[in-house]
Length: 179
Image 1: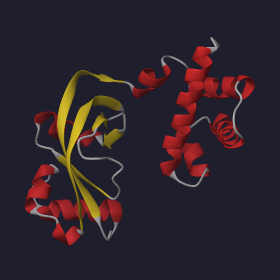
Image 2: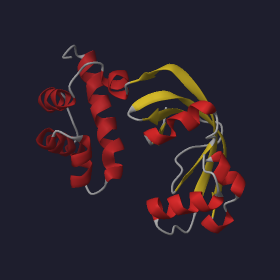
Image 3: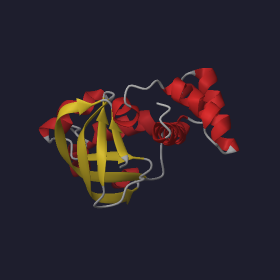
């Protein structure tokens, strides 16, 4: 399941139902899809994607601003400028949030109590990896950080690739009884 991430400052707006949309530069989601919702480092619930609209910033409305938890369209536009500069287009992603009783630590969900660097080291020693995965895991072992590794690979957006490799390695190591 894909993940929709928010800063911790939006937690109460999500829980109260006042935040029913988010405006992003990219949209990897599809209408009807269910996604995990992250806030402040925890998975706090799920969201069903209800609607996705591509808009130019000047096409955004007061309703879009309210759905995104802002007091006014001007507040929303100011935040968008701070985050994204002057984008040509944005995506208004509307969703229905369902809160979990307790937040879930994503690390525990995907890796149990295993240490990520240890997963990488074991995978390098014991799994038949392709060259690209091996190079990424070697870099990860050196940096000890998904974020630092992603930046060395050229972009913070590469974190998902690193996480996917680590999850796959963790599952293969578990199947082999090595973790």
